[in-house]
Image 1: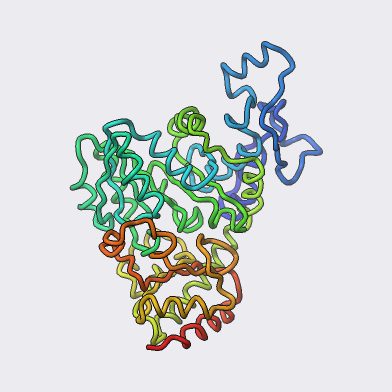
Image 2: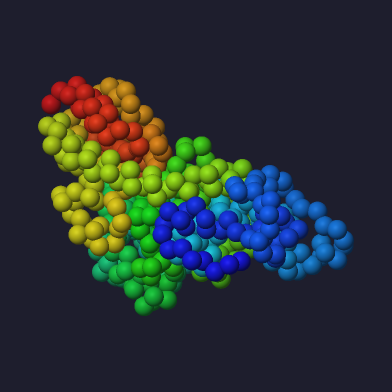
Length: 409
C-alpha cells in the first residue's frame, strides 16, 4: 500500500481504506497498481470463504492475517470500512458491529471483568444507561454515575477496582459537554481505560483520541451512514484493544455487522464532511430562531453563547453539530401540539439523517429510564430534541414557526 499523502477530512472520508484488497485470495497483495479494481468497494455478501487445500485452511485458523475464514471473524467489505474509520478517528485500528449498542457492549465487555467498576456520565443514551445499571451488575460490574462536566467529580468517584471511565460529549439529549483532555488525563493517571461515545460529534466535529481518550464509539446508524437505512456501530482504539474485542466479545456475543450494512455505510461516509457542515450551518440558524420564540423556555445548543459550556465547545469541537434541545413553556401538552403541527420535520427517533427529526425523549428514547432519574438529570416532560437535517434552512424555520405559533402560552 502506498504511503498516505492526504490530510483533509473530505479526502479521508472518500479514499481512506479503499486501497485495500478487494479479493480475499489476494489479501496480502498491494492492489493499487492493478487495473480493473472496482472503484466502489464491492459487497462480499457471503458467510464463509473457501480454500484450495487443507493446509491453506488450517493456516488461516492459525494465522488470521493470512486470509478470510468466516464473516463473523472478518470480511473484506467490513475491513474497508474499519480502515476508513480508523483513519477518520486517528486511531490505530477499528472494529465495526451490528449496532451502536453492539459497539458499546463489546467495548465495555472487553475493558471490564467480574468485580470491575465504571465511572460514567450521569446523562447517557438510555440503552447505555440500562446496560450499566441493570445488565452489567448481574455480571458483578458496578457503575457510579456522576456529573462528568466537572472533572473533579469523575476523579473523586474512582475506586481501586475502577477499570473504565465512560462518557458521551455532547450528551444525549441535554447536550452537556465533557472536557475530553481533562478526562483523559485522569484516566491515564489512574491507569483506567477511557471510552467515549462520539456519535453526536462525529470524526468531523471532534477528535477524542487526539485529546487522549483511549476508545471511541459510534452508532453508525446516525451521521456516519447519514441515510436512515442502516443499523451499525463502530469501535476505534489501539490495535491491542481492537484485537481483544474482535477475538473475544464480538465473536462470542455475535454482534457482527452484515456486509450489506457495511457497504451501505461506505456509501454514506464520503459525504460526511459536507453533510456535517450543512447540519451545523442549519442548526445554528434554527437554534437562534428557537431561542427568540415566545413559546420556548430555553434552548441548548453548543454553538449558542447561552450554552453554559460554549467556550469548551469552541475549544474542542469543529462545528457544533445538528442536535438542538429545547424546553417548551407549555410542557407536555405544548410538545404534543408542536409535533402534531409539523409538516416538514418528522416525528421520529434517531438522528443524523438528511431529514429533520423531532422526538420527545421522556416518552420515547428515555422512556425506560426511571422518571425520578430523568427528572434528576434534567430530562423533563417538556423537553424536545431536534436532529436538524439538510433541508433549506428557511423551510425548517417556517415549519417550526407555524407549529410553535399554534401553541397556547
